[in-house]
Length: 58
Image (cartoon, rainbow, N blue to C red; front, side, top):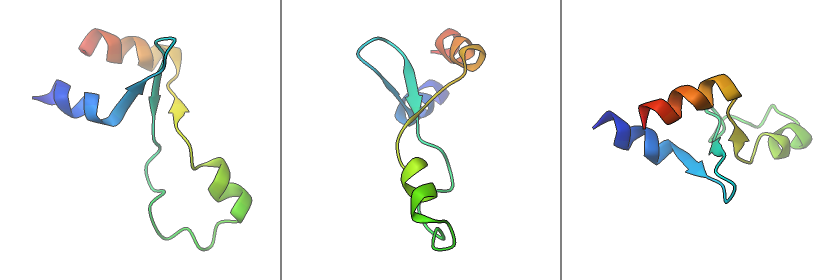
C-alpha cells in the first residue's frame, strides 16, 4: 500500500527522472513575493541519493 502512496506523489519524466511537488504551496502564500511564488510553483527534481532510495523502494 505504501508504494502506491509514493507513486501518487511523484511523476516520471520522459528521460526517466523523478519529479515531485514541494509541500506548503497551496495557501497562505500572500506574504511571499510574486517571484517566489512563481519560482516555487513547478515540479522539482529529487537529489540523486534520494532518487536512488525511491527507485529501490518502488
